Amino acid sequence: MCGIIGFVGREQAAPILLDGLARMEYRGYDSAGIAVRSDTLGLQVRKTKGRLQALSDMVHGGVDLEGALGIGHTRWATHGEPNDVNAHPHVSENGSIALVHNGIIENYMELKEQLLRHGVTFASDTDSEVVAQLLEYHYKECGSMLEAVGRCLRRIEGSYALGIICSDYPNALIAARKDSPLILGFGENGNFIASDVTAVIRHTRDVAYMNDGEIAVVTADSIDVFDSELSPLEVEHHQVDWDVSAAEKGGYPHFMFKEIMEQPEAVRKTVSPRIRDGRVVLDDVRLTADYVRDISRIFIIACGSSYHVGMVSKYNWERLLRRPVQVDLASEFRYSDPLVDRRTLVIVISQSGETLDTMAAMREAKRRGARTLAVVNVVGSSIAREADDVLYTWAGPEIAVATTKAYSTQLVLMDLIGLYLADLLGTVSAEEYAAIVAGVQALPEQMQQVTDRVEDVQYFASRYFNHDSIFFIGRNLDYAMGLEGSLKLKEISYIHSEAYASGELKHGTISLIEPGTLVVALGTHAALFDKAMSNVVEVKARGAEVLAVTTGRFREKMSKTADAVVVVPEAHPILQPSLGVVPLQLFAYYVALHRGCDIDKPRNLAKSVTVE
Ligand code: M6R
Image 1 (cartoon, protein in one colour):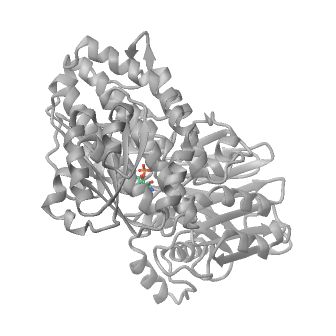
Image 2: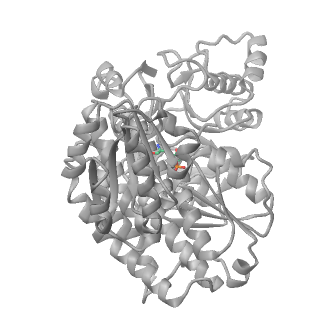
Image 3: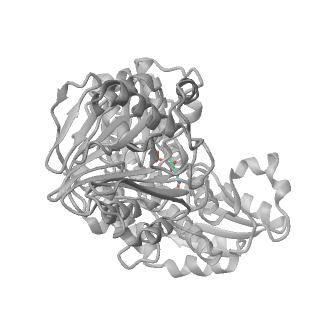
């Protein structure tokens, strides 16, 4: 979603701002803009609807804009259509204050009406402009920018990450955060604010994560942080440990393809520090055996692909733990008056750690007394910091909107957590424990075998890319995996697709199967292979074209009925989805490629969904 960058230092700001915005393009946006301050020209604002390249062309890569202090923004429209005027930065009426904003100001209508009564005129339809006008109002009232920010924040309701510059303050930008991420970057030639570490990683790895309610005053040589009452706070520095190349394509045609190919390594990095001498070690988790034995119920809460990880984990955890595990979409959970109490363990899964629905659901669970454990990829993200315990997936930065390596690392980390809990409960035998650990250790090598043979899937994608409706069917873990395969396909190729539990077909969906309909049949879950096979026969009998995914031992049986078969290595049963999902990701990728889609930035989608 929207991206913010701000810089103040000893270099021209505009090229740095444009580069930072380019590195956040993956988040999704529909317009972009920058504001730079110079002694001679004051505040210069340039913004436009459309791609960042249009903005860059407008200012000749930034060389046109003089000044070493500036803010930039990529906007994903919420209030007001995507156009030049609604793009950020927004400028106050007298032109002295410019700001960029992520989030939603919930009481903006009320504030706007109050300002209108004071004769303020508005240029845009956005909630964000209200903050700029309100700031000018309070600045005129008190004469101090910091005080004006404090007064303004006390009046606004909702979520915000703000970057503010003022023509009266040549050396400082002000930042503030509530429920929308913002980091501070300490550079050699100046300092930064950004909504995403990727925007500043070329300049510095020394960062601090702002907390809700904090305000920062950033100059070229210092960053001071204050609480909402403007009392100074200590700043905690963090070193970003991934390399700048991790957020670059490195010769791959798309980030999505690069990230698919990185999966063996990402899974290795996620599991290897957590297995020692054949035992699962989760150093960061403080769950005692007594606590775990007292748990009456487990919820897994997430959105999108992270929810699909939860679906796989439900099957696996119930089998390992013999405890009820409920998977809920975060957006449903939060309003469902959930049956959660202090004996409930709530697992939240999120790549970004900023998904608003997931965050709100987690807060609701905590409010009801549950203990929360977050599985998160982005270090220092809001969910990671608010959960009682956090376990990071070490996937590195994921840039493509369609998640792949984050999904795979979440999946394997959930397997480890399940095994860890089962061990505390005594519900897993020593033999099975050892078999699963060995299976997890073998996964990176097995995933590599799949990614080494992309041509198979590439060929099938070229055969099937022009279908306009594709069904994924499977049972149990294959069903959960099919949900992810179907989402991957539809989000990047725009083909209508649905995933069904195979046994459910005859209760309605089978009426949609007609001669030529493509059905992706998943037959990797050995325990139910024969059942899955009978559903393949069922759809074949209605004329479907069947592309199947299975393991070596079922290839022959499957080939007798299916039109095409992709084979993946065989793993321990609970780990099989980690291998089966890879050809589904590749299938979505190649189908989208054949259809000429914008793979890394699919229409209407954002990488991290920070609005409801
Ligand atoms: O960052 P999160 O894992 O919380 O994001 C959840 C979903 O928005 C995300 O998985 C989305 O469905 C992806 N586009 C799927 O590829």
